[in-house]
Length: 205
Image 1: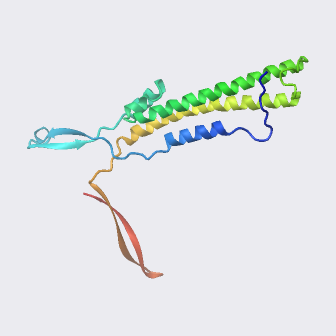
Image 2 (image 1 turned 90 degrees about the vertical axis):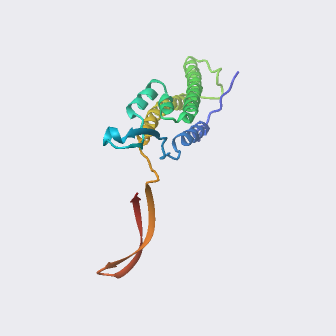
Image 3 (image 1 turned 90 degrees about the horizontal axis):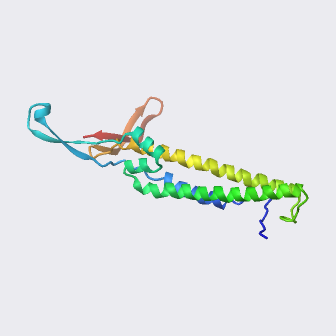
């Protein structure tokens, strides 16, 4: 006969730690601000009737399309955003959470059946546990199952948010035409006289 350990004081936090590390690796990543650019050649004859001149233009992704793709098939929006490396992390999160949903539900059903049997006079399944202990186990595993179901919905929602945010950032570019300079600055204030500080300047070439 299979016996389950009953913990009244501390709960098993290993599944939550594992899922937390997985989500941290997936969602806390350094945003990439330098985007892939497509060189679009537009002739001056078409614009001003002058010589041909190459013009560089970024082609941002469509956030609505990225979100819709991830809603239909999780990870599809990430592929559309050229972030295919996130897809294995998404599905690893789904599979891990689905495993714990089944694990917790199995324990819940086991103790629920044992509780019904106990009420009918059959104490053979868990002879060392009284009715109060069985009820606590039923509540504990049911709560864990419900939490992992909510976590599954959260992973799906974060998949949509991530696709949408990446698509919005695809049009954000920091190019060589933007430079940052830090230089000393001396200012004069009526109350305190001269003061020395640093000035942060953004220069557009």
